[in-house]
Image (tube, rainbow over all chains, first blue to last red; front, side):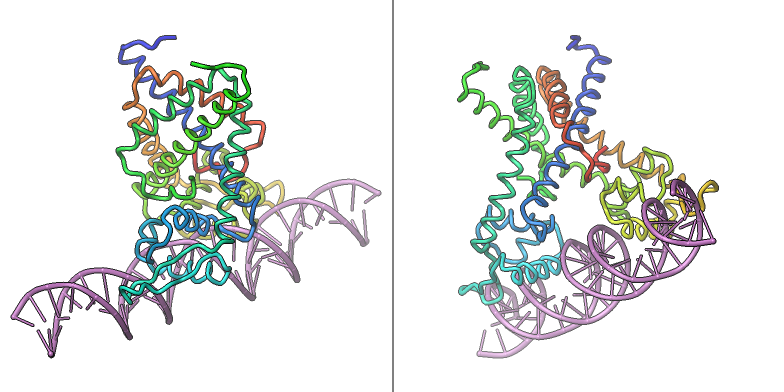
Length: 163
Length: 163
DNA sequence: ACAGACTGTTGCCATATGCAACACTTGGAG
DNA sequence: CTCCAAGTGTTGCATATGGCAACAGTCTGT
């Protein structure tokens, strides 16, 4: 195969990878969407994203949470309202600063996040298991290189649900 | 590299790939989200998904559109309402069956879809270009194998925005 | 001719989001 | 110490998304 240095070949190379990436994206998105619905139909994608963030950082104040989610503080505040009502998070006043309120997951929420994540990993692993083993090694190297190459562009937006 | 048939090695293999896939997913989602906002802030992700479907299939009736989007027909109907108001799509009664109404993109919508898609491809291509060229070939083969392996599970859900 | 299926619409409800206006707290500047 | 600016959370208002159920036409096969 022509992994040549020629400009034309190089361009074709990039194009082929781009196409492959876009194709794989479709599959990944579908997998992720399914894994939520399979565990708990009552929870929405946006809510799950919030839960994932809370699980990874422990407890945060509203402003930081809104920041991480990339939404308006008012949106975060009302989402927390609903998650409190659903018994998934708890508000706790910060003793050192009375204007700050920290939010934490309940045990129930931890369980849900674990289940969804496990489900997602399982589904991806199931797909990977179907691949010809020779291609797996290449996929790891290539994906890591891809993530590395894109890492400089900070990934801050709606990532959190895709842990 | 131990691409052995041993069970343990095989399992580790699958785990490594799964991790790599999940990492790459985060990046891909961020890229896709940015590419919409960059072109037209007025359009939402859901609306863009509808536009992409319409562009790929030409014209469809409401029921098929809702099916493709994976939403309730009522939701699709009202989304079309708003897109008509925005001048992005047109409703046309089907002469052969008066109960069917087909929806088509306007020229403006075609332009928007092209721009967003181009932007997304450009951003991915920019990342790919940063990868060590040796790893690109592996990425193509591996991603295609991955998509192939997952293809049997039908990808019908929220795919369309990720073209 | 008519019953049942198909198709789109509308009412009602809940969630998700953004913007702007508020209220309250905190930390400095004077 | 006083008071103002910045920080933080909440609420009102508006729009978009999304599901379910009820409806009103339209078609199709019996």
